[in-house]
Image 1 (cartoon, rainbow, N blue to C red):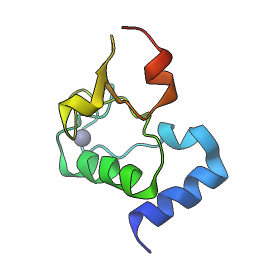
Image 2: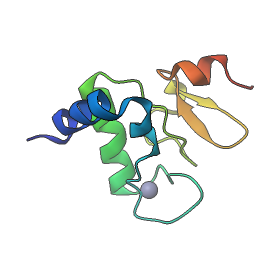
Image 3: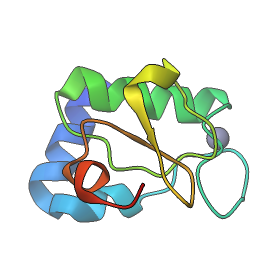
Image 4: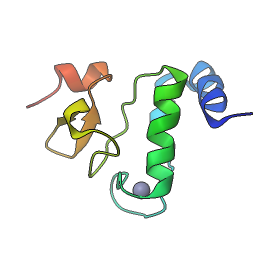
Length: 86
Ligand SMILES: [Zn+2]
C-alpha cells in the first residue's frame, strides 16, 4: 500500500485530525519541512489529492505554493490557510 493510499484512508477515518499526525524526524514545535519524512508527507498529501493543512517551519515544496502564517508555512490547498491570518 502506498503512503498516499494510506493517507486517504486515514483522512476518511479521522477527517481533519489527520493533520495532527506527526511525520517529522525532528521534535520541533511544527514540522520542519526540510527532512525526508516531511517531504514524503507533503508529497503523499499531494498524491492523495488532499489539502495539506500541516504547519511547516519551511516549505517542503515550491515556496510559491505556500502561504506564510505567523507560525510557519501552510500549503495553499488548505482552506484554513486561505482564510487565516496574513
Ligand atoms: Zn521534518
